[in-house]
Length: 240
Image (cartoon, rainbow, N blue to C red; front, side):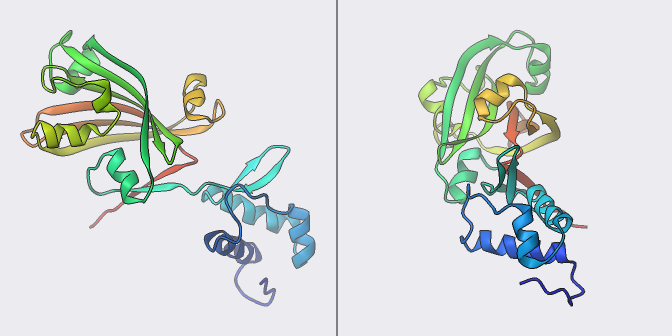
């Protein structure tokens, strides 16, 4: 497995070997890996080489470390290609995962200046404030807060938002969702976010603000989302 005569760096050889075991299912999610010392002794390489391979695999999302407990095979990250506009439900179903939501808050509130600006409405116009935990196969992926004009999208209920908002807007209201703009930045989880997402306070997360528009350019929703960085990654396709 490790060829010391190869020009390929030893850490990279070990990294690719472990990665292949994970992808073939020989190392399963949640399974503990042998200690760095054991790998070093087995393949007659330095512990620094093993640590470098482990670190790269952690950064790529194949492994995760628990302080005082060891290194484990991680849950694979869900990849979302930022090429087309789709709902969370559509994304999960396309990957063969069961989408779900846990509704935390469903209110009608007067629009603040920020929300009014994003939705192109006047301050104090009624808007739905919908806070949900988004799930994939029952596991929390994101904490999402939607703001939608109650005058534009009438008759929303808790039952509707527990399914797919996009399916309701397009299928039941016959409105065409057309474009969206996202702003993505990195952050660390607050105590409340960590509790909702079942992660540690201070764990890395991705903050995403999205403004979504109908075909005629009317803003239909403004969304603040907190995604688990250990479970989700975005791929951007670009063409020159």
